Length: 202
Picture: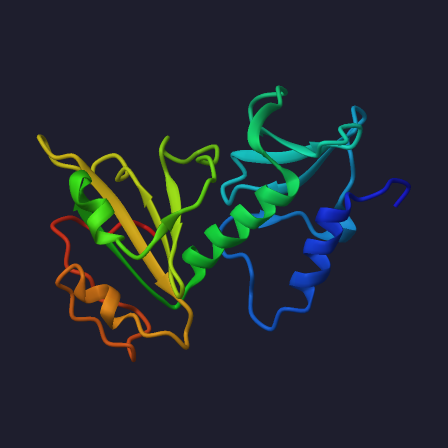
C-alpha cells in the first residue's frame, strides 16, 4: 500500500470480513484494498450513502481524530470522535438501519425518557447530515435511534421525536412494541406500524 493503515481501521475491516451477515446497509466503508490517502495525508474511509459526506483521518495525527467534509467542499471539519469511537458509532447505526426486526414511532418529546426506560443513551455526537441532537440508545437486547422527525413529518404545535427500535433476529420485539401500544409479531419481517403520516424512508 505504501502507507500504514491505522490499526483501528485495519482491525475493523478484519473483524467485519469474518462476519456471516452484512455489517453496513446505508452508509459504507471504503474497501480496504481501495484505501488511499490524498496528497495532504487525509485518508477517506467512510462514505455517506448519497455520497454527500465523507469521513477521513489525518495519517499524521497520532490522536486519530475523524474529520468530515461535504462533497462540494474541500474543507475538513472535526467530527467530534476519534477513529475507534467513530467505527463503533457507525457500526451500531448501521445495525439499526439494517435490522430485520425494527419499528419506527413518533413520540412526544416529553415521553422519550419513559418510553426508553430500560435504555441508556450512548455518548455519540450526531453525524453530518443528521438532525442535531440525534442519539443512539442501547438496552441489553436492543438499540434505538432517536432524533427529530424529517421535514414534513411533524405537525404544528407538536414536539415529536422519531424513535426507531431494532433487535437481533433471536430477540423478541413484541415487548418493545407493546410500550407504544403496537401489536407486533416476532414472525413479521416487515413490521407494520401505524402512524399518522406516510412512513419515513428508513
